[in-house]
Length: 404
Image (cartoon, rainbow, N blue to C red; front, side, top):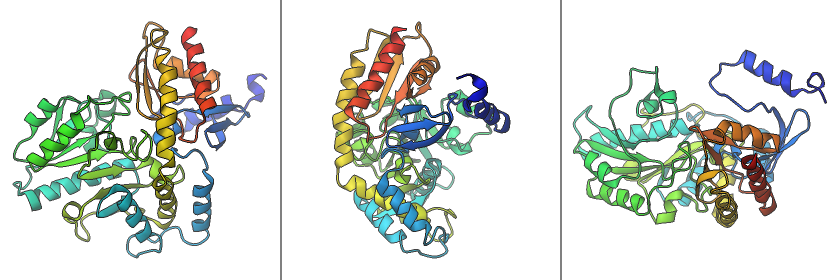
């Protein structure tokens, strides 16, 4: 075929013409999807190895999730939190039980969950810990990615995310990720929380040193500081456990959840914590028109029930070992580093070979979609419904790209 009878080039041009250029997507235009596979407007199929940054942990159009959405669409989609709807209590209860927490506060996007966590931690600091008004601070890590609101980018160390969006919100202390001594030294009498990703996804699936998360848990307990775990990308089965914190037996004071919680259908996020933390909020002090809406709750209930069986966590752990074996076999053959936890991998390509963007473009040509980050690093995060054969297909495609 030539370009004038393909739909993709024109669709790409139209997208570039009519949208602000805050993303630099691969030149592929998706029109349908099922499971781990995407089909573009010209009928070409691609293996999805990004899964919407973990928003599609259960694959595209999972039948149980689609059925829940269809059923709810025929009954009720939105009430606002001015009223209670019949899906709300079940969602909050079942998610709280999955997290082992007393309460859940539903929101919409991951950034909303992070903002909520920050507000709750500050309020807890003033009302419970006794921090002087306006003095609360939160310790965060270099290389973090918690969202793109003005408050969140204020403590980002990624200049693309941060530059020219000031003035910046005060109240955050940044320390090196994985450095327990630096984190401990940064905590003072006004520190109300430590906010961390158990695994840094946007940074390239960076796994902290063994013992780091238990050390953070211990120092937070000793210094009367909340440990907030941003599990928006790492949680809900992605790493081979319900939460990435589970790998080291760590229970944070607060979970921030999102992405996969919406089943790839609607944006759903939540904060889960005990009553002594979330109980500081009173009516009128925080809210969201669409947070906890009936459609979101109906889908998210089914997500929680899928996770409650443990099936997807086991799949991620078992298939992740196959992915690890395949990728580690490419170290020295174009890869200079590999980090894998469950079905989540960060791959460092020899920068002398190509950039991460170039690698993703060449993978696309071979029917595999992935995403680059920070120069020559790419991330793989396939849906947890992927098969062994499809993992092998992705690894083979990568090997071909690296071989030139």
